[in-house]
Image 1: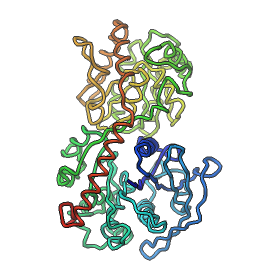
Image 2: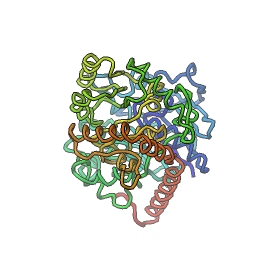
Image 3: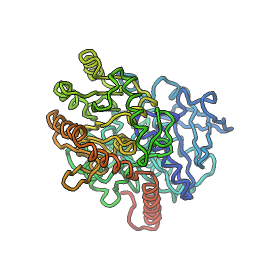
Image 4: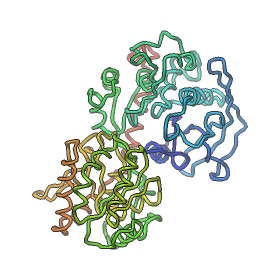
Amino acid sequence: MRVLMITPEATPFAQTGGLGEVISALPAELAGLGVEVDVVMPKYRGISSDNYDIQKMDLTINVTLNAKKVSSGLWTYGDKRGVRYLFLDCEEYYDRENLYGTADADYEDNAERFVFLTRAAIELALLTNTHYDVFHSHDWQAALTPVYLRTLYAGEPLLQESSTVMTIHNLGYQGIFWHLDMPLVGVGWEFFTPKHMEFHGKLNFLKSGIVFSDQVNTVSQGYRNEILTPEFGFGLEGILQEKGSSLSGILNGVDYTVWNPEYDTHIAANYSSENLSGKARCKADLQKIAKVPELPHVPLIGMVSRLSSQKGIDILAGALPSLMELDLQVVVLGTGEARYKTIFSELAETYPGKTGIFLSYDYELAHKIFAGSDIILVPSRYEPCGLNQLYALKYGTVPIVRSTGGLTDTVEEFSSELDSGTGFQFAEQDPAALEATVLKAVDLFLNEPPTWKRLMMRGMKKDFSWKRSAQEYLQLYRRAVQQRLGALSGGPGELV
């Protein structure tokens, strides 16, 4: 099995969210199963030979976009785990300060930038005469690859038997552009229909990828079920329903070589479920960094998040005034929308000594928060999978999550009667529900330490490694290949 993954980001090279970490861990796990995996992505500013052991290849990829000729060099990085990363060196599109836009707006030429990514991925296969069994696209930025394979490149013998997989990491981001970008995309106007690429008079990259792919998946079974409904489908629920059994949910995993308190080099002390003593030192270290009193008996609540309404930041902001009246500490790390930055800046000024607010992205501090906190908040309005609750469980930090998507799939509600569960859930999207759940958790922490410790231990022993998920992706690839071969033989799966 040979797979080409097309992605806009991958850790450690470029990351804005969970997608980057997926493309760091999943390909390596697949390689361990015998899959040959190449990953193609943009060579953004910062991905240089000064920062990474990348090598320039003697290859140039040429693509014509609406009569404009665009060329790209190619760099490669051989992952020690057996994965090859390929970077498209096109300064015009990718040599910028940010990946997708500024703090104020997306880059105006994002359609062109990612049309190029998807076209170049296919040209790469042709240029190197490499047959890939599966072209695996991640999110809207890579979603046009399956479109091209079935339209512009439909006559290429090397690509005839290649199947396509589309992974939706977040349906809320679809890549919607004006209809006059169709000539840029380069496929015929006959595909600008509600059945294919058109979406309320505009061009929708993600919808296009869903329609043209052999198999589509998202990153948890719970989210897979939610996106079939109007509440979570963002207007694509009908298209997704039409995929039927070709739509699946595969839970993201955690790379425990990186996120594991037993080996983590970013935290003050290592610890495990067999020896928890180091966690107290991690808490004291985090309290010192946050400039709050180093008191072991005071509940320390952490949050690492993008500051956006999707992440339920408004829910937390509404609950904080009441919560801050309690004897507890809150540490928040994140960046995002200006209005939420203002709210948390004001919170820091109003409650000095009780809050540590860090309005940035800090990888090392994130590790310290997962290790040093007693509780982690994930109050998302919707969450395709979520990784923070998985990290928290491994670090013995009890998650409080809203019951949606992958959060429901991965956090088991605590039961005092059964002495079971791994965390706490709340359903309503309002501050009162979050506040009540925090009070429940804090009460358990303060008044039933033995029960709290057992709750921590159950979470730490859960296994959310990539091993099981990679096996499911391998099965997904096999279904996609069979579907493509069936389509070629006149069986089911042929695109209408």
